[in-house]
Image (cartoon, rainbow, N blue to C red; front, side, top):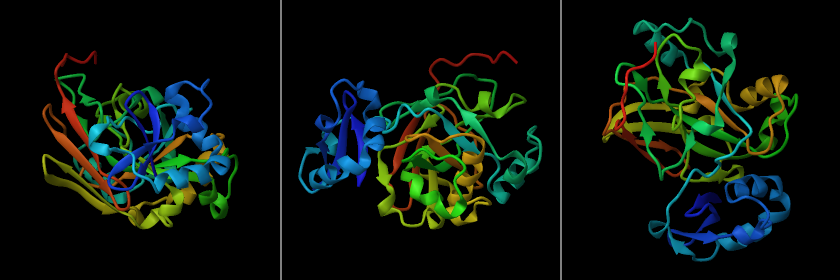
Length: 286
C-alpha cells in the first residue's frame, strides 16, 4: 500500500484509478494532523485491515489533491555516511574537505527533522557562494521500537520505504549542520509499506535533474545493506516507530542551481519531484 498526507495533512491510502482515499477518521481526533502518520504506524497491526479495505476503493483523484511529506515528524533522521565506494571516490577526486573513509569508520549522522519537506514545497538554496548538491537515497521508515536489533531480525521492524533526497552543502562544517538546513530532506510522495518491497537491497535508483540522468545505481551497491544499518544504529540509539534511516547515495552527485527540477525514481516506489528555489540567496557566514 501507498500512504500519504495530503491537503490539510489528511491521512490517505492510494486507491484504485489513481486516487487517494481519506482514512483520517481511523486516527483519534485528538492527534495533531501532522502526527497522523506516526499514529497510523504505531497502531498499524490494528488499523491495517481497515486501510487495506480502503485501498480497494476509489477516492479523490491524486491530481486534485496536494501531496505533502508523508512523514513530517519522526523523532530523528539517521543518515548513512559514505555508504557507497564510488560516491566516496568521486568526492575524493573533487578534493572534498571531508575526511576520507567509508561507513565502517564514520557509521552515520543525525539530520534535523525540521529539514523535511514534501513534494508540495521546494528545495531552498540558502547561499550564493556555497556548493549545494543532490544525493538521491532510499528512506527506511521504522515500524516498531528497535533497540539492539540483530541483522537477521532487522527487516521485521520496518514499516515501509520512501524516496528521500539528502541535500548537502559542501564545506568544513560537520555533516549534521551542512545537511540540516530547512528543506534539505525532501521525502515522498508516499510511503510504500514493507510488504510491497520484499528486498530493499536490490532496488534500482535513478535521479534526473531537468530530465538529465545524474545518478543511476542499485541499492545492492551499498556497503552496509538495510538490515546492517538497522543493526548498527539500533546498537547506539533506540529507533522509534516513524523514525527514518537514509541509506546513502550512489555516485553522480552534482551541484544544484535555482530553477532545477529533480526527479528521484526508486524501483517500486512513486517518483519524487522537487523544484529548486534560489529566491533569497545571501552570502554564507564562513
